[in-house]
Length: 236
Ligand code: NAD
Image 1: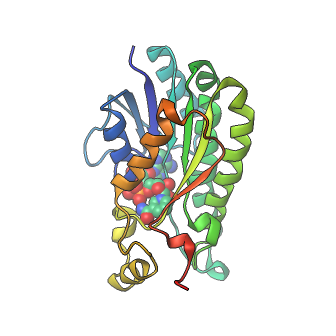
Image 2 (image 1 turned 180 degrees about the vertical axis):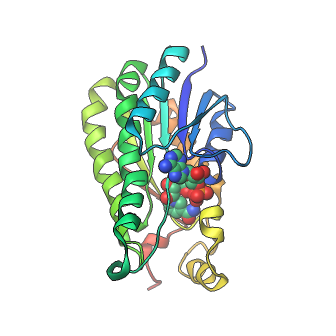
């Protein structure tokens, strides 16, 4: 039987591109709160990743129907930007709940199946802003940093069963999440990127495919920037 993957945040943007790319190779379950752009993947699960019971149910049903689960990519994410002294409780809570708790819920629900896989892969889509911080994103940066620490712990816990756990740290990627930014902000992001462009979803897809590949079985616990060099900082 073909291997089985689950991708969250699969309805659009980076997640959708990951589903389409992995779908050329494996069966892919797509999880999201909405599929407004139409169905994606081999099966769709309309689930809020911050709802642990709903996540448990969906992950169990995939593992039962498919006889296991091999690759999991946690891509669901939201932003609620506001400078920290004006940020509301609900803006803080929502971003932590979806980005961090959601990734934990999915990782926990999938852990047993990944351990049985023999070639389990768990990939969390964090952000370079979890490492460098970002104005107006105390909630988002905290959640994305939390994902990195969590993934390193999961990497240790799951290593004995051959499961690798890694974070990908995108820089600015041209998706619906960033298309709302003003031209000035986009131009400033490009100016701060040594490779001179915004990222494309294909850049993230390439990293996901690499980490899922059998040849990447000795790579675990890393936080891999895919950012055109943005984390390098301003030019010397
Ligand atoms: P996007 O907004 O285009 O897609 C995010 C998807 O997550 C959407 O389909 C949305 O419906 C889904 N989602 C939101 N809340 C959810 C929930 N509670 N349960 C399930 N699904 C939910 O964003 P994107 O740009 O494709 O980003 C994908 C991931 O990459 C996110 O985790 C984001 O934080 C991260 N990221 C993006 C960028 C960027 O520049 N676009 C940079 C760094 C990190």
